[in-house]
Length: 258
Ligand code: MLT
Image 1 (cartoon, protein in one colour):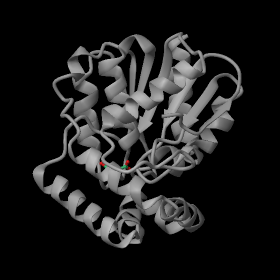
Image 2 (cartoon, helix red, strand yellow):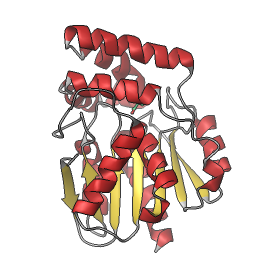
Image 3 (cartoon, rainbow, N blue to C red):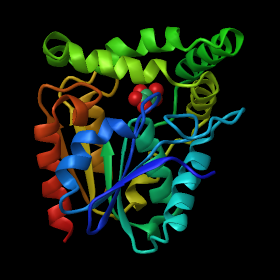
Image 4 (cartoon, rainbow, N blue to C red):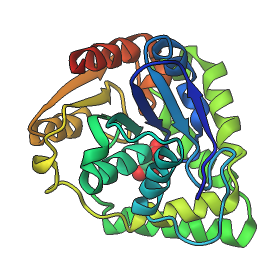
């Protein structure tokens, strides 16, 4: 499926994949900061932003293949640096495992390698059924939004929380239920980590309520060639909440690959 995407800047390609119910605009700060040195491509995954939202379940491997198809259409055959946040990280891991030759570096931001527990998968299915019945994504947004931001953002960045909520509420119902069901059946990739030899940046938000820092530390430890950056004053959306620290870590990492 052809995805909507942004494409900014000259130089080596960096692809950034957004999280669940977000879109490529979550990377605005990274597009601006990295875009003077790198060509930053940020797709809208299927069911998100301006990409189409077909009916049915969206397996993570299909989302990953959409991104590879986009690279093919853009005639980008040289290995790229790929980053993904949370659900975007599941997609990035799928590409790292299934299409490793397309990559020269990996950035796993506020994400995990483990599959859903049965309880989490059930919560997702219940939400998807609710959305199917009502066509209304507001309950998912209401459940998720408070968990995405750390305390600093919640108390000082009301504008950012509100803007993010607007993007989430615009998500098409089919995209939200398709993604929920796709995440619920995604494969566990913990055992794959030790085979990913790409240089990898693992980023954690110091106050991420969804992915504890310790889990990110374990993931970085399981990857043969990874470094961990813990972003202060940030929750689950570290690159949005503290772009200064997140961009510095990303630029350092990208520079180390040159
Ligand atoms: C995300 O931010 O993409 C979600 O938290 C991922 C998930 O629900 O597992």
